[in-house]
Length: 487
Ligand SMILES: [Zn+2]
Image (cartoon, rainbow, N blue to C red; front, side, top):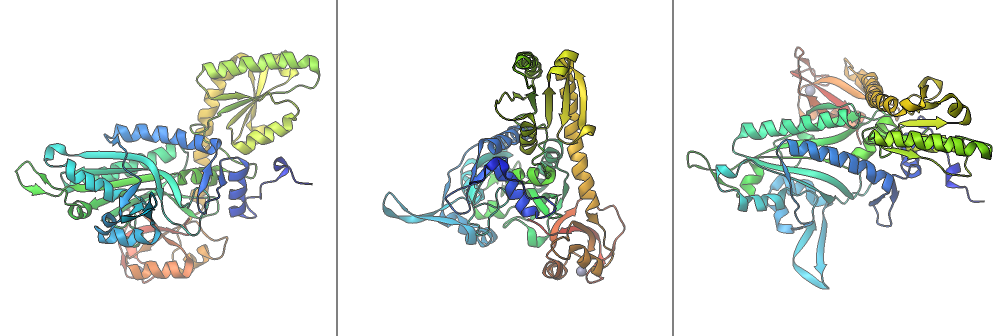
């Protein structure tokens, strides 16, 4: 007999993290595999999370002064050649369109892997004077990078993202913009997604192709591997020179503008799953949950049903009136226990249970998803449901961040010599952030990567500690850097 999907258990997280992740994404109906290799289907529950974070981040981006626009999916192949590092970085993973309408194209088109080239081509036509600056554009779109090894949300051939592109009159202003967006991302990840962030600069080896400096927000997932959650690049004048963007400055001198680009993608959905999920399933931060509160009426005898349902609808109405996203689970023919498990698996932050005895007592039981069992349950007078739910949701949002931060802190070690670093990273179970002194030289970075599989994730901006010696070569090391095995 075929197993009903509902009977399928999620692989325990501690047993096989990768299998747990896949089981969870599929069972919670966030996404599905597609017939096209490397591409996924975002199901409504997954897409709703993307919509919530997109809407919030869009507001925050607009507050910085950027405006949304939309550029074509196809880019003339020759555009990619214009910036040497950019073409080297992206050419291996570009999809090329050679035919259209049954004919071979005169010039092949690439499917955008990122839009620096086409946007800067347009910037060259729009920017003439210092009065045209700053020019700050954001685009929400899909991009394609031909990945051979894919994982749902984390690495897919096609993904959704936003990409910001700005041009400024001075280096200082562009550098400030790069850091402003880094801070927008850091704040957004922590406040809205409840994901703790280590922010910093990338090493030269990890820099965006064509950037002078790349900044990153990184987090640590439940298996001790780091996930890059967003990047902000200072592009210098590399693209404005390559695309011949010029403006007359206030002194009537022709200049190339200074530029930035920055983005986050649907990879953040994977970050939410991995940062917060447990063996029972998803745990969604209330800010992103499309259902924040589920109301589950419980009754056995038919004559109890009416009273319980009436009370449940009253509670539901109160929650909605308070502006909370609530759902009433009236499904017949499934047990309350099944419903509890189902909503826990889908990550709904708060559950309201109402049975006949609760109705008689004029109260309900509230159960938190972030604290399972009796410790997360409380009784509340039915007329206080909405007020109490709002308080609990805000606590849950904070607690998820606190739990994830505690896990990240516990997995951030400071090995004091190279042996300790190797021990920390050894084997499948090894990982976490290694906060180490590194001289900044590529040889030492490469050796760490080759021998431990850890790469430089971020060089924190705050370096308020005395200089010391590199953990690999013992040469002077002015800075500490976070190394980890990464997605
Ligand atoms: Zn070194």
